[in-house]
Length: 315
Image 1: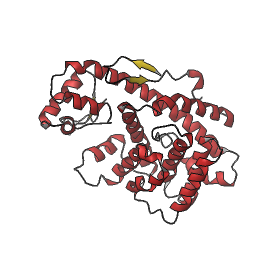
Image 2: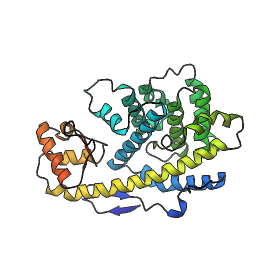
Image 3: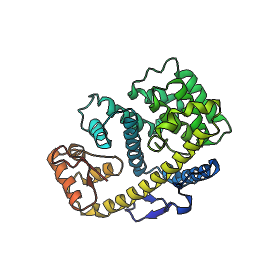
Image 4: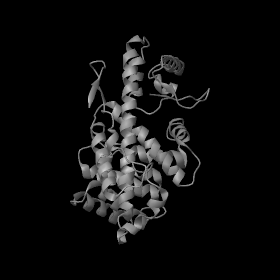
């Protein structure tokens, strides 16, 4: 990891550029080459996954949004990432965000440090509103066994996903959520799980995963290796982009005179998106809107909706 310039109070860490030789190739790959690419990807994102700075939270929220959008599409729904973000952020406090928003809630929960403990998984999966009895106790026991077993981390993730799909073929979200959770717990060093698999694995491979439990010549395992390789590359590229954007934001922070500017800057560095009312902190929504528009004009934040009203801003 290299340190980019930043005020002394906050150091932005940017990963080194992802090596071209380690990127997964588009042509057909063998199991061994897929495993090599996946291992390189996990190594490359390890520093970002261990970063305790607020940017690590923002990075996980962006990855959670990507996975939630992929799951929504897998479920045959038409909401895209922007719709999911709207459903969660623009709702009134305590309102139900709807099916799409709940998927995003579940993947944000996966990215929370609480998800490092398997005993919390059932509660964190609650937004999906799955009736998991009687399947949950054996699923959790299988996950714990895989975590303690000497098998490679991605092999354990593939195994728990296959078990979940065999028991609950109607709940692919459960299988993909558990795969990322088991992978992180198996590795044992990350601050929280990193949402990776859902946006990278194919529907055909996922629904064929139960065959892995009866010997499928490694097809599902190879699919998981290849998916984690691609997902790891994307996650490293995303973190590097966010680090560059964060550095630019911090560079102009000293130019802002608004009383709520410091609190808003901190929020932009740790949250996927803010409404002007969130940016305002202790002042009015109007002042929050002015601050967001000022940051937009300076080119250090983006407007995420393309709308003239009910706008959302983010790094």
